[in-house]
Length: 253
Ligand SMILES: [Zn+2]
Image (cartoon, rainbow, N blue to C red):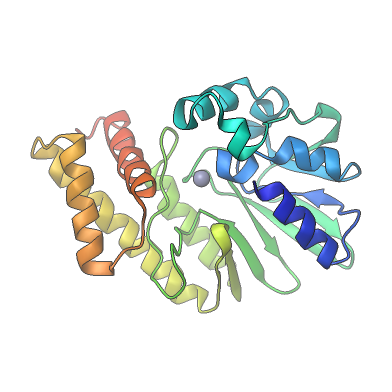
Protein backbone atom coordinates (compact mmCIF):
# COMPACT_ATOMS: atom_id res chain seq x y z
CA UNK A 1 0.00 0.00 0.00
CA UNK A 2 2.79 2.42 0.90
CA UNK A 3 5.16 1.34 -1.85
CA UNK A 4 3.40 3.36 -4.58
CA UNK A 5 3.35 6.39 -2.25
CA UNK A 6 7.10 6.09 -1.62
CA UNK A 7 7.73 5.63 -5.32
CA UNK A 8 5.72 8.76 -6.10
CA UNK A 9 7.49 10.80 -3.41
CA UNK A 10 10.88 9.69 -4.77
CA UNK A 11 9.80 10.77 -8.27
CA UNK A 12 8.70 14.17 -6.99
CA UNK A 13 12.08 14.60 -5.29
CA UNK A 14 13.90 13.55 -8.46
CA UNK A 15 15.35 10.56 -6.61
CA UNK A 16 15.54 7.90 -9.27
CA UNK A 17 18.52 6.07 -7.78
CA UNK A 18 18.57 6.33 -3.99
CA UNK A 19 21.76 4.99 -2.42
CA UNK A 20 20.13 3.58 0.68
CA UNK A 21 16.79 2.34 1.86
CA UNK A 22 16.76 2.41 5.66
CA UNK A 23 13.70 1.13 7.50
CA UNK A 24 13.98 1.91 11.22
CA UNK A 25 12.82 -1.62 12.02
CA UNK A 26 11.12 -4.60 10.48
CA UNK A 27 7.61 -4.46 11.93
CA UNK A 28 5.18 -5.04 9.11
CA UNK A 29 4.04 -1.42 8.78
CA UNK A 30 7.66 -0.31 8.35
CA UNK A 31 9.25 -3.04 6.24
CA UNK A 32 6.45 -5.12 4.71
CA UNK A 33 7.13 -3.48 1.34
CA UNK A 34 10.91 -3.60 1.62
CA UNK A 35 11.41 -6.47 -0.85
CA UNK A 36 9.27 -4.67 -3.40
CA UNK A 37 11.16 -1.39 -2.87
CA UNK A 38 14.46 -3.24 -3.27
CA UNK A 39 13.16 -4.48 -6.63
CA UNK A 40 12.07 -1.01 -7.76
CA UNK A 41 15.22 0.80 -6.58
CA UNK A 42 17.57 -1.87 -7.80
CA UNK A 43 20.83 -0.07 -6.94
CA UNK A 44 20.02 0.91 -3.37
CA UNK A 45 21.64 -0.79 -0.42
CA UNK A 46 19.13 -2.03 2.13
CA UNK A 47 20.34 -0.94 5.54
CA UNK A 48 19.27 -3.11 8.46
CA UNK A 49 20.29 -4.09 11.92
CA UNK A 50 21.64 -7.65 11.99
CA UNK A 51 18.78 -8.89 14.18
CA UNK A 52 16.16 -7.92 11.64
CA UNK A 53 18.00 -8.95 8.50
CA UNK A 54 17.30 -12.67 8.52
CA UNK A 55 13.55 -12.11 8.63
CA UNK A 56 13.73 -9.92 5.54
CA UNK A 57 15.89 -12.34 3.55
CA UNK A 58 13.57 -15.17 4.52
CA UNK A 59 10.27 -13.48 5.41
CA UNK A 60 8.21 -16.60 6.22
CA UNK A 61 7.67 -15.55 9.84
CA UNK A 62 6.66 -12.06 8.81
CA UNK A 63 4.21 -13.52 6.27
CA UNK A 64 2.84 -15.94 8.85
CA UNK A 65 2.23 -13.22 11.45
CA UNK A 66 0.67 -10.99 8.80
CA UNK A 67 -1.72 -13.81 7.87
CA UNK A 68 -2.65 -14.20 11.51
CA UNK A 69 -3.27 -10.48 11.94
CA UNK A 70 -4.89 -9.60 8.61
CA UNK A 71 -6.17 -12.87 7.14
CA UNK A 72 -5.10 -15.12 4.26
CA UNK A 73 -5.94 -12.55 1.62
CA UNK A 74 -3.78 -9.76 3.09
CA UNK A 75 -1.94 -9.41 -0.23
CA UNK A 76 -5.07 -8.06 -1.91
CA UNK A 77 -4.97 -5.06 0.43
CA UNK A 78 -1.32 -4.69 1.41
CA UNK A 79 0.55 -6.21 -1.53
CA UNK A 80 2.99 -9.12 -1.34
CA UNK A 81 5.83 -9.44 1.19
CA UNK A 82 8.84 -10.25 -1.00
CA UNK A 83 12.25 -11.41 0.26
CA UNK A 84 15.18 -8.98 0.15
CA UNK A 85 18.17 -10.52 -1.68
CA UNK A 86 21.01 -11.03 0.78
CA UNK A 87 23.49 -9.44 -1.63
CA UNK A 88 21.67 -6.12 -1.26
CA UNK A 89 21.97 -5.89 2.51
CA UNK A 90 24.20 -3.53 4.38
CA UNK A 91 24.19 -4.66 8.00
CA UNK A 92 24.80 -1.93 10.57
CA UNK A 93 25.46 -1.74 14.26
CA UNK A 94 25.38 1.02 16.84
CA UNK A 95 27.77 3.86 16.02
CA UNK A 96 28.18 3.03 12.31
CA UNK A 97 28.30 5.98 9.96
CA UNK A 98 26.99 5.98 6.40
CA UNK A 99 28.35 8.46 3.91
CA UNK A 100 25.69 10.18 1.85
CA UNK A 101 26.74 13.00 -0.46
CA UNK A 102 28.44 15.57 1.73
CA UNK A 103 27.01 14.27 4.97
CA UNK A 104 27.15 11.41 7.39
CA UNK A 105 24.32 9.43 8.84
CA UNK A 106 24.96 8.07 12.31
CA UNK A 107 23.23 4.80 13.15
CA UNK A 108 21.99 4.44 16.73
CA UNK A 109 20.79 1.02 17.87
CA UNK A 110 17.57 1.59 19.83
CA UNK A 111 16.45 -1.89 20.91
CA UNK A 112 13.71 -0.81 23.36
CA UNK A 113 10.84 -0.69 20.85
CA UNK A 114 12.11 -3.87 19.17
CA UNK A 115 15.49 -5.60 19.20
CA UNK A 116 16.02 -4.70 15.52
CA UNK A 117 15.17 -0.99 15.80
CA UNK A 118 17.65 1.68 14.73
CA UNK A 119 17.45 5.46 14.64
CA UNK A 120 19.25 7.51 11.99
CA UNK A 121 20.85 10.83 12.85
CA UNK A 122 21.82 13.25 10.11
CA UNK A 123 24.89 14.85 11.66
CA UNK A 124 24.78 17.82 9.28
CA UNK A 125 21.24 19.05 9.88
CA UNK A 126 20.82 17.34 13.27
CA UNK A 127 17.61 15.78 12.04
CA UNK A 128 16.80 12.53 13.82
CA UNK A 129 14.78 9.78 12.17
CA UNK A 130 13.64 8.28 15.42
CA UNK A 131 11.14 5.72 14.12
CA UNK A 132 9.16 4.61 17.15
CA UNK A 133 11.97 4.85 19.66
CA UNK A 134 10.72 8.16 21.10
CA UNK A 135 7.08 7.12 21.24
CA UNK A 136 4.70 8.40 18.63
CA UNK A 137 2.72 11.53 18.00
CA UNK A 138 -0.45 9.71 17.02
CA UNK A 139 -2.01 12.84 15.61
CA UNK A 140 -0.45 16.27 14.90
CA UNK A 141 -0.42 18.53 17.93
CA UNK A 142 -0.77 15.69 20.47
CA UNK A 143 1.92 14.81 23.00
CA UNK A 144 4.08 11.76 22.31
CA UNK A 145 2.72 8.57 23.83
CA UNK A 146 4.45 5.20 24.00
CA UNK A 147 4.65 3.16 20.80
CA UNK A 148 4.78 -0.39 22.04
CA UNK A 149 4.31 -3.82 20.49
CA UNK A 150 5.00 -7.36 21.64
CA UNK A 151 7.08 -9.50 21.73
CA UNK A 152 10.45 -7.77 22.11
CA UNK A 153 9.49 -4.44 23.71
CA UNK A 154 11.68 -3.69 26.73
CA UNK A 155 10.69 -0.70 28.86
CA UNK A 156 14.07 -0.32 30.52
CA UNK A 157 15.86 -0.26 27.16
CA UNK A 158 13.17 2.01 25.70
CA UNK A 159 13.78 4.67 28.36
CA UNK A 160 17.51 4.27 27.92
CA UNK A 161 17.19 4.75 24.13
CA UNK A 162 15.30 7.98 24.75
CA UNK A 163 18.06 9.25 27.02
CA UNK A 164 20.74 8.34 24.45
CA UNK A 165 18.87 10.04 21.61
CA UNK A 166 18.33 13.17 23.70
CA UNK A 167 22.09 13.34 24.32
CA UNK A 168 22.62 13.71 20.55
CA UNK A 169 20.91 17.12 20.83
CA UNK A 170 18.77 16.75 17.71
CA UNK A 171 17.08 19.80 16.23
CA UNK A 172 14.23 18.08 14.47
CA UNK A 173 12.46 14.77 15.03
CA UNK A 174 11.13 12.72 12.15
CA UNK A 175 8.70 10.29 13.75
CA UNK A 176 7.37 7.20 12.01
CA UNK A 177 3.87 7.49 10.62
CA UNK A 178 4.37 11.00 9.37
CA UNK A 179 5.00 13.61 12.04
CA UNK A 180 7.92 16.04 11.98
CA UNK A 181 8.44 18.07 15.13
CA UNK A 182 10.71 20.70 16.65
CA UNK A 183 11.39 21.10 20.40
CA UNK A 184 13.01 17.65 20.68
CA UNK A 185 14.13 18.06 24.28
CA UNK A 186 10.64 18.79 25.54
CA UNK A 187 9.09 16.03 23.42
CA UNK A 188 11.61 13.44 24.56
CA UNK A 189 11.03 14.35 28.21
CA UNK A 190 7.28 14.00 27.67
CA UNK A 191 7.74 10.64 25.94
CA UNK A 192 9.84 9.39 28.87
CA UNK A 193 7.23 10.57 31.36
CA UNK A 194 4.27 9.08 29.45
CA UNK A 195 6.01 5.75 28.78
CA UNK A 196 6.73 5.39 32.51
CA UNK A 197 3.22 6.46 33.45
CA UNK A 198 1.44 4.00 31.14
CA UNK A 199 3.77 1.25 32.37
CA UNK A 200 2.98 2.04 36.02
CA UNK A 201 -0.76 1.98 35.37
CA UNK A 202 -0.57 -1.37 33.58
CA UNK A 203 1.66 -2.93 36.23
CA UNK A 204 -0.67 -1.75 38.98
CA UNK A 205 -3.67 -3.29 37.20
CA UNK A 206 -1.82 -6.54 36.55
CA UNK A 207 -0.88 -6.81 40.21
CA UNK A 208 -4.50 -6.12 41.14
CA UNK A 209 -5.41 -9.22 39.12
CA UNK A 210 -7.28 -7.48 36.29
CA UNK A 211 -7.70 -9.38 33.02
CA UNK A 212 -5.84 -8.25 29.89
CA UNK A 213 -9.15 -7.11 28.36
CA UNK A 214 -10.03 -5.06 31.43
CA UNK A 215 -6.60 -3.42 31.37
CA UNK A 216 -6.93 -2.53 27.69
CA UNK A 217 -10.27 -0.90 28.46
CA UNK A 218 -8.90 0.94 31.52
CA UNK A 219 -5.87 2.28 29.65
CA UNK A 220 -8.06 3.32 26.71
CA UNK A 221 -10.31 5.25 29.09
CA UNK A 222 -7.34 6.83 30.86
CA UNK A 223 -5.69 7.97 27.63
CA UNK A 224 -8.95 9.37 26.32
CA UNK A 225 -9.61 11.26 29.51
CA UNK A 226 -6.12 12.67 30.03
CA UNK A 227 -4.76 13.06 26.52
CA UNK A 228 -7.85 12.99 24.33
CA UNK A 229 -5.78 10.18 22.86
CA UNK A 230 -6.22 9.45 19.20
CA UNK A 231 -5.04 5.81 19.35
CA UNK A 232 -7.19 3.39 17.41
CA UNK A 233 -8.22 0.03 18.83
CA UNK A 234 -5.35 -1.85 17.21
CA UNK A 235 -2.73 0.61 18.52
CA UNK A 236 -4.19 0.52 22.00
CA UNK A 237 -4.22 -3.27 22.07
CA UNK A 238 -0.67 -3.47 20.72
CA UNK A 239 0.60 -1.02 23.36
CA UNK A 240 -1.03 -2.74 26.29
CA UNK A 241 -0.08 -6.27 25.19
CA UNK A 242 3.51 -5.12 24.62
CA UNK A 243 3.78 -3.84 28.19
CA UNK A 244 2.02 -6.91 29.64
CA UNK A 245 4.32 -9.27 27.73
CA UNK A 246 7.35 -7.33 29.01
CA UNK A 247 6.25 -7.32 32.66
CA UNK A 248 5.56 -11.08 32.55
CA UNK A 249 8.86 -11.77 30.79
CA UNK A 250 10.69 -9.81 33.47
CA UNK A 251 8.90 -11.76 36.18
CA UNK A 252 7.38 -8.60 37.65
CA UNK A 253 3.92 -10.15 37.80
ZN1 LIG B 1 7.05 -0.86 15.38
